Length: 401
Figure (spheres, rainbow, N blue to C red):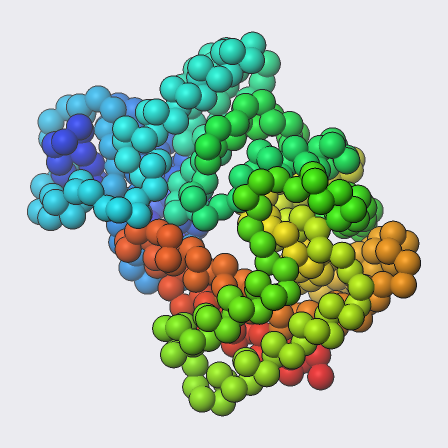
């Protein structure tokens, strides 16, 4: 289907008009680099995408017709934008849950901080920042410097402190994580990792990523003092309570009576999972191959915003579930062997069988956190996700039987 785009353009506090629809090459709503490139060419001024306003027909965070609020950094020549009435207060007015990077002043502050921090680190910025992605979970910019590109990432208040999580793993296996050049509250500057994402990784890359993460997690499990401060707690008593609360909430109300009863019954799996003997440790939280990066050698793992303290089986399942069917056994074997060799007497294979439905319930809780923490126009990214994840848990339990 693809994605088409319209932009409502402001300059300072002035609404200038609209442009579009026009087609872009990437279907994902958060991928704004081609949007910025097109608008810059047409308007002949630098622009920044601030936030998503409306989606028509798309789903799954991709495709359809997408409307963004775009800020022009200089005033375009008159006549390039079409007149289109808008509710100016709704477009530019305050919103309590709006991300800092969804405001022009917030982006300017973020880029100024990045430039100052890189300069102090001996990595002077040599050109304009490239806006790669923006959505309710992150903003991502690529900054050219004298020593190569640097990635600036900003995250919301419900994300983990990526810099501190990366630092914990770097003390165990520095090559497992990207280099941190600078960090501040809800922001981090990361060195560029050559290569590509590992969606279609060969078996040796899969084995390396899974084994090395498990090895580092096993070490960190024995070092409670090394846990980053403020790391979200998702150990069994906590996450079970969060799931119960979710089932009692509006998301649970989207389920039928039979579905609700079956979902509550899945919580009985938690004691069985605990019996498997895996230690609580720092969990990546979204350990799919798209978050592994490799140039042919051992991969590094990126995007630690969902990190938490809990059972590492979640990462083993995520790695398996996102790989092509034929490559899942390699990931499962690598994960099972890694934990069996490090924790004598544990039962990682049994943990994978038990925890499938629990992983989906855990993600349902996380999706609700997203919805609770983002502004209304961007909730379309996650609407229905908690209930869908609960239903996926029910299907998983049925499949595993």
